[in-house]
Image (cartoon, rainbow, N blue to C red):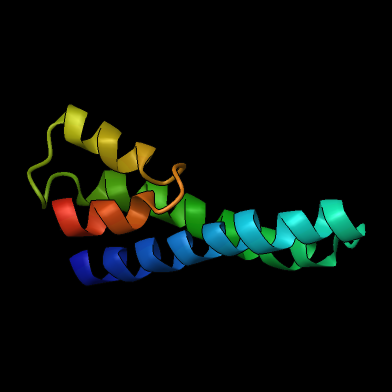
Length: 89
């Protein structure tokens, strides 16, 4: 389960960075929203999967509620999932 969570957290982090730093500037600078539409759905699914897996894996990793909160917060901070992987996994 830990390895699945690591893969999902990596993919979620990459999709978030692509959405934030590639797709959104293209949308607002060039008026082309197709990249946001293309990356938005996979990122949303990976984000929800990240949240669910973090809650499921909490007992396996012996995380208290504060640690779980930090892990969940890392999903909305750019580069946060990569930090979480190094520190908590």
